[in-house]
Image (cartoon, rainbow, N blue to C red):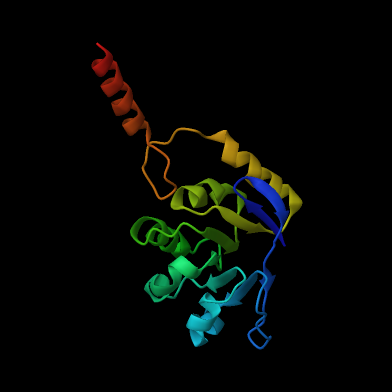
Amino acid sequence: MLLVKDGATGDDPLVHLADDAEIPGDGAILVSSARFLEDAEALSQRKGRTGVIWPNNRDVDDLVPYLDRLAVIALVFPTFRDGRAYSQARLLRERYNFRGELRATGQVLRDQFLFMLRAGFNAFEVKKPADAEAFANTVKRYSVFYQPTGDGRMSALHRRMMLRHSESASQ
């Protein structure tokens, strides 16, 4: 599976572990939510990077105690019409201040990529190289937005207010 992260395309550095696979002591892994919650303390304290695949029908509050120890949270879009992972992403970024990799997985479509970025996702699993290239280009396409969101970019209104403030301060 191809991964687009922070505008660059590459292979996924995380090993997706089956629920019955042995957990390695080091190395980067991605486990299911069931596997993670089964032994969250041990998994979140291992030496290698640990990530969890979090379905959109689970409450992200269950992850809060472990956020500072998780390197990756992969939120699932089971269909392109199901947007609950957008809400999960915003909660993780804005309410819980998660600064690790927030990955969109499942039905990740080109025309929703910008909205996913704005919700706080910074990594995307894609199926086709053409999609990976389109996603990487979208990162560079837009620089100003009207709505404030979880990606930390300043809105057009705040830019204007800062500009006016700096102009009045210099007079």
